[in-house]
Image (cartoon, rainbow, N blue to C red; front, side, top):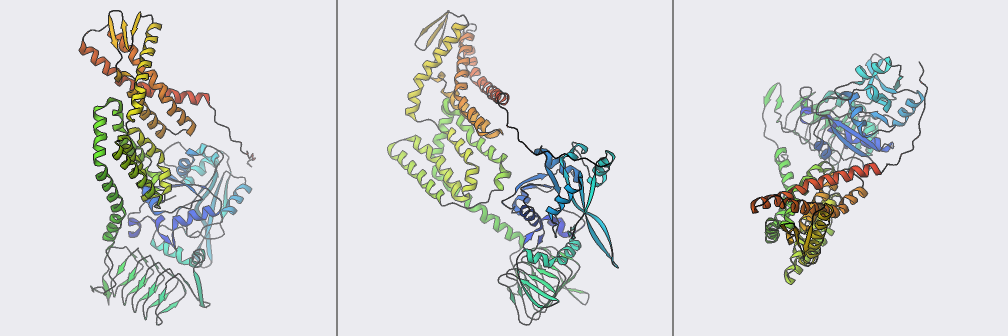
Length: 634
């Protein structure tokens, strides 16, 4: 369960969702996913009110996990989250519901064991809350375990909560709800104050999980340090303190634990920091004081700034405060950094400028060939469908953008080899006047650029779309000339056969059909090549869009050829019959052209019918699973 931005409770939570706050060396959601993977869990659904792309970019999920991100356009409640996660799991799955903001993660194996021992339908995990004066009480931790039998009590849509809706409904139906006690506090936080309390109370556990080296001076002072830490000899550190990589603490500064300083944090001279968490890139100016605070990424406190129990968001300038009077001081030379918005802009510009430059150079280099392709699409009916292929390819990539964005990018040098092969093919075509080789080099060049810039994993992910691009290219002249005449003869013969079966008196002279007083000539343009190229595009698009097995997609692709022949025969037969009824060149031309366009939706009908027939002829194998039968105590 990942919440959205929280406007009003905490200034930092309104800028950055709490699920993306760092705990030690990882953000809290990543720690939870890693913990799940270490306990053998492989399938995770992350339900959130945030934009899915933000989570995909921010969270580096463990490779052992199959993570599905579910966006909640409207709140669905805790039980509603179980319903959304269960939509793709129709088997006897066990569901474990976690809030994302857990600092101290529980023993999942113990929870599952307790759930099965209790023979309950739903287990609620409780944790002890200490109230002082040695008093404590149990409260819900937000962790639940249930089987898919609870789905019958959850409405099909709308908001539905576990505590207020699901549990009362199950108890009224006589189902068993069990309460399990956790061995430790989870540290579930919602704002800065709870975050500081949760992180600093579990600072030892966090440091040990992140495997920082510990240096213990005495019973009350333990320091965990990463690589490249620089501490001035005059600085003083006491209590439990975590100093991550490249932390710099200047002279006469004091750090009183528990404290956690993130990567690349700089602490100026004569500064006091106590009971606080400083995120990566923070700069604390000279003679400042930070007490029980959270400092955002790259936050910059001016010299002489005093902050107590505050949440300092990056980008906001903090004024110096001495003796209750607000003073503005210029930052120390060398301590200024590029403002966050400009740094983010520069990072995005560097990220996209190189691919944009390469793509621009590619288009400029191939511009004459692309113009020639455009001319072929415009003037040649056989290959007019190729005009749609690039736009359809972009549309397919847009539909798959969420899965593509999750693929890690790692440029592959073999892409340069593939690109050089495309250029060699292009030079061969130019030298020996093989235009087909030039056209092929366009697709191979695109494939080489994708592999070179983005790597093998993304190349494999989009390989089917790259193959689809070959359908935009015209056939080589020799192949077209070799198949045109046989196709024309076959089209004439099939049309004559259909007309004779229907009872018409037919006389055939080559590719000319005489039907009574009417004459129909099967021209070379009616040989069916246009149908074949168009139906290849349609079948390829359907294969890329439908969610079927590769065998079924292969059947659809192979069947595009007989479907094209069949549709062309129907068009010629119906046109010939129409010419016996209607006279006039204008109406004959209108019907001839309309018949060609009408074959496209007919082809789609054939393909849809083919997929329907495959569903009726094939039966998916049944998975054998163990069935646990339990008797519920009343």
